Each structure stands twice: as C-alpha cells, then as structure tokens.
Length: 294
Image 1 (cartoon, rainbow, N blue to C red):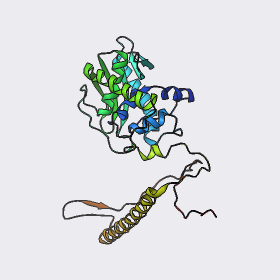
Image 2: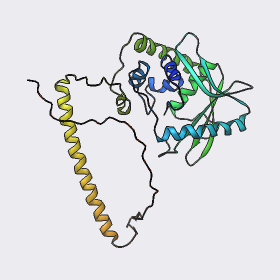
Image 3: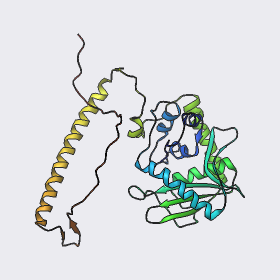
Image 4: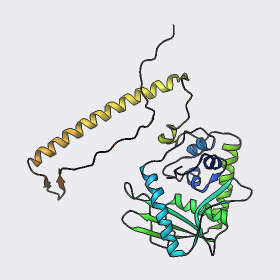
C-alpha cells in the first residue's frame, strides 16, 4: 500500500496533479487496497491527510535497508528520481535507478505485518503481483528502459530480486487508458463509480463542521441493515464465546491437548510490556434519534 509518510505538503500537492506509478493499479481496478474512486477523491482534494498504518510505517523503514542491499548487488544507484511521460499526466517517482544503464529499481516489503499478500514467483522472474507489475511497467513507460528490477523483502523468504522486461503493447495500453481516465474524471470532473470505494478512504473525506444534510429514505434502509448486521454479529460472538468455553472445559487443568484428527489446542499464558498510547483525534459514527425542529 502506498503511504504519504515523509512527504511534504508540496510533495502531496504535486502528486495530486498527475497520475503516479503507484496510482495505476487502482485506476485500472487491479489494486487490492484502492479503487478508481479512491484515486479520484485524492486527486481532487477531497481527503484528509493519512499518517499511514503499521504495515506502511514499518515498510518505510525497511525499504531503505532493502534499497541499500540492492545497491550492493547491482552497483551504484541514483535515488528518488522523478520522470515524466511526455504529453501525458503520467509520472513515475523511482525508488532508484542504476547509474550505468538507468535501469529502474523498485523496492517492496510484504508479509512483515500479517500474511504474505500476493503471488510471488521465483527469483529473477517477472512473476510478481499484478499491481506491482503495473507499477514497474509505468516506470518503464516513463523512463524508456527495457527492463526494471524489483527487490522485495518477503516474509519467510528474505530479499528476492525480480526482473521485469518491458512490454511495448502494455505500455501503449497504459497511455491510452490512463489518459482517458484523467481526461474524463479529473479534467471533465466526472465522478467514478462509488461501488468499489474503500471504507478507509471514505472515512478520510473532508467534512464541513456542523453541516447537516437530508439523507433521505435510502439511508433509513441502510441503518436498519446496520442494526440487523450488528445483532447477527453479537449472536455470532456469543456463539463463539460459548464454543471457546466448551473447548477450555475439555482441556480441564491442562495447558494443551490433541484432537482425534491431530490438531493441537493450547491455552498458554502470554506476557506483554505496558505502553502509553499517544493522544490522537478520530471520528466515530453513531446513530441516535434526530431532534425535530418545531
């Protein structure tokens, strides 16, 4: 996932005026994290700033080390290079490129927080998740390079180098699709479909303090649906707790046990250090009876 960590307000404003390589998969519907609507909301200044999450923050720190590792393998690197595709809104900000041949070098981390996401193939193949393949091809489009390298720090595998050769047909298709999207949704202002908008992005929409709007009948239906889902979730939680109780009763005074099918169940004491949570601001959605104006 792309984060805004370490970027100045000027950097963020400049990103809104172009399609970056990290936006491409989302615009084309291939990103697991963002939708075309999410990109549109960001480019049109409708979102509050994002501080990142645990995965993006950790990735920011680790990627600097992975880039140094890559440099030890491929030679001297020129870092943080911005390259524009002429006569288009497409821009690629490279993590680095080689000093000798100008090969783009992209760095990723995956599986550091949670399971390894995406389909990662053998080293030196181009078998990487589609959203990263599109990002690297956007870099090839902007730089004119014939090959790109992606160094990925993968949970359980370490650092793996991938080699992605240029596909001219894919590059041509990217220009056509991205320019059409930009002209329609940014220049002409047509809002993309909200169908695949992600909750985390919608939560970041800028709000006007004390503004109240008429939500109409459709939201009444959504609120009743929310109540039903909450009741179902409460019932499922209660059933899960009852199941946990029966499993623990079966363990008795033991810390672990083995089922007939060979599964091991344990109930071990855990220790963690205390910590202090820094103050923060956030929004909470609540539903209550509205006051009727007299």
